[in-house]
Amino acid sequence: MNGERSFLRVAAVSRIIGVALGMGLAGLSLTTSDAAAEPGVTVNLRAAAAWIQLDGSLLGFPEVEWAQGGADLNGDGDAQDIVLHLWDASTGGTRNLGLAIDGFRLQGRWVALEVREDAQSSSDLNGDGDAGDFILHVFDNATGTIANIGLDVAAFFVEQQGDTLAFPVIEAFQGRTDLNGDGDLFDDVLHLFDAATGITTNLGVPTWRHPDQIQFRTNALAVGVPEITNADFNSDGDRDDLVLHLVDPDTGAATNLGLATGAFQLGPQWLAFIVAEGFQARTDLNGMEIHSIRFSTCWIARRTP
Ligand SMILES: [Ca+2]
Ligand SMILES: [Ca+2]
Ligand SMILES: [Ca+2]
Ligand SMILES: [Ca+2]
Picture: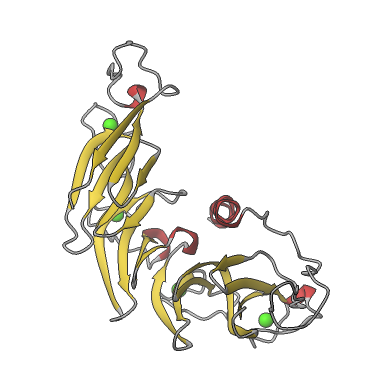
């Protein structure tokens, strides 16, 4: 399971920030000065960072304890953790969140971070009786407070729209709980967290932990739903497909488009996606009768206002 998590983490990190995991373990040395972030001045944060993500003026970087003089940055008595720090270029201040993480995502006011139970004093942060989970926390950069959401989530797949965060919760790690009610424990199930109210909602829609398979825009979520642990959503006689669904974040209602897709993009006005004939009942969708999974047909739909 850790191998799976590591693979997903590397893929997601590369996508989000374009920096390979592990780069900078010997120290972040971008700079010539310790001065504040004035125009034309580079600043050395003097922190060994595992990777970085910048959103606006806020820079997030997990600091590596063993590469930072053996400092115990999360106060758990060892120097084996990577601990999330935030640096605000508008103030020059660095904040140590004091939590050992596996991933994080900066999006505006809210910072989603995935705290490792085993690296955080072996604490059971989701209350499921073990200390092997990676638990979603949300930091409020406006107030400086942090909330434990108590759910096992891969933070790299958190999407945000305003104050609402959308993410998959992993059944197998969340107390082995069947979160979509289909009788198995194999699913990653879409949830929402309203950071303004603190309310979590289980939408019951299975998702796939892969880049861009959850996309969140105003009043809509586009989700690639895997058939393999669920049902034949595109009615082509197999359960090998990833089938595009649209979910209303307000009501939780899911609309199955009944089409196999791997690539899609949800914008403010349009939904564009690719349908592979080979995954769609080997149907000729462009009048050329090739039925390829490699050469696919492009589709676009206008969203309702
Ligand atoms: Ca430590
Ligand atoms: Ca636990
Ligand atoms: Ca299930
Ligand atoms: Ca199918």
